[in-house]
Image (tube, rainbow, N blue to C red; front, top):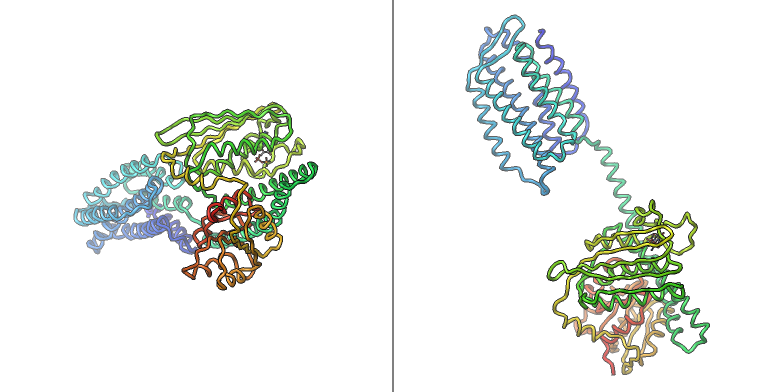
Length: 610
Ligand code: ADP
């Protein structure tokens, strides 16, 4: 029994591993499936090895049984190697190929090789050595396995080389150990052929593999899934909350901005005009905060989209410059603008997002510079025939950023001057959004700053050059804003559940010689149309109780003859809203607080002038 000692110990280990493996529910992955077959094969090998010991020992009693058992043992050992090969091939392919692989061809080849070897093992002769306790088999049948094992090892090395970047993956450990120990075992086996160490080695590998395969606890996975569901629900509740919050804040803001806007145009004393300007600036800041929070929520939900259209680049820069000037206000700051005049007028990209990125850098420069100068440079490189790389640089002589804080700059809600008790308003969201937008546009941003001296932000954005500009130009002509407009008593219907908002809209439309009617619910709007009232345009609020604007338009569109341009008014400026409204049947979209110019553009587009 002496030389069977290792095999008996292996039996104990492999039974323990099998119990440990099968007692728990496992994920049904290819990896665990292969491992299951590996340990079952090893269990069979160990049992067969023990039986084989006795059949060889008592060879004379039933010689045919001995032959079958010994060859089955060889086949089982070979099967073990084949299964390990399948395992290593699967692991290495998983790491090296991006797509999910279909293994049909490989399986067919493997089956043919395996069946041929099995056939040879049973066909070729096997000899037995039986002297005292030194019992083993040898001969051509066993040699088939040895040859195949060498081929298999070469294949393993190929798999390891193929996936060399992941060699530290712990799943490869059993293979390294197996290859090294196999060589040692073969030497031991040659010197002491009676000691059966190969079966024990296989069991040892099974034990190591047990700790290296992906072996997650299914109970834990279920708990994680429940937690994930809860987090998703909480996230969607947060999105709803933000959408409502945006609505709730924008609705009164619409009244504040609308009335201040019209008041600033009235003939009021200079002092009041200045105060109204301050109200407008404060409202702008508040709107920026609401928009920032909405953008961050979109980023977290992976819903921030880039919507590319042709746009007038130079006009955008002019707007940026004038906005920055108003943000600098009366601070003793010189604002220098240097623009590469070779940049084409019309580019293709997401104009509002490009503007948002640069405006954020310029606003920060204006905010964090108390005196000195801000230099805004726009340069470009044509990198392909139709792609231009825009390089925006914003350099200021402001408070600067401490070196150790620069890498935190793009974290959301990170305000770096807090410890210095700097009392400059802000949320710490701007640069986080800027970075994300640049990532989405394949752009880049770099920062250089010296604390106490100033900062320089450089952003790179690639845009397409628009070759055929005639169509955009004609569109632009249609939408140029001329404030002295008069519409020939054209009929406008305003639908909004909020009285104050109706008042604001009426006030904004007052100067244009329009015949304005209003109703406070979707149903009243439908009734008006059904009664045969004709309007030139309808401004329809979306978020109304009982019947939303979306439901109203769907109802109105049921009548094929309904063709009154209908514009969605909404305080809910969440993800891709414009596209959603257009797809439902609205002709246009106006976000609250209503921008006077945007409203006029829409009127000019849909209501013909006198
Ligand atoms: P916010 O300006 O609303 O705080 P940002 O994300 O735009 O948020 O900026 C994050 C922080 O980076 C700011 O709080 C400020 O400390 C610092 N910072 C950004 N731009 C500048 C600048 N031009 N000069 C100095 N500090 C800056």
